[in-house]
Image (cartoon, rainbow, N blue to C red; front, side, top):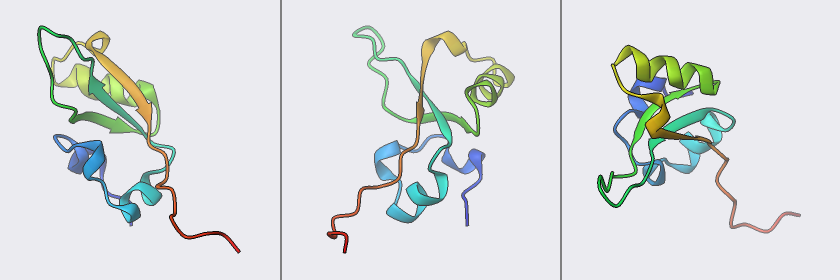
Length: 83
């Protein structure tokens, strides 16, 4: 089952489980751009199937989309050798 985009907000991308990463593979997330002045935590600020959806979500919350980087969630790499 795919987690809802809203349920990801405020979570670290590193905290996603293998199952969540598999379910969310191909989805986009917005993370605040690092700056020595702001030192943001790497927390998901928006998520969606496209960057435009992330931008829209940020704008709805009066956040500046230019202050965020957009990354596609990749599936977790399996540590088991393929057969």
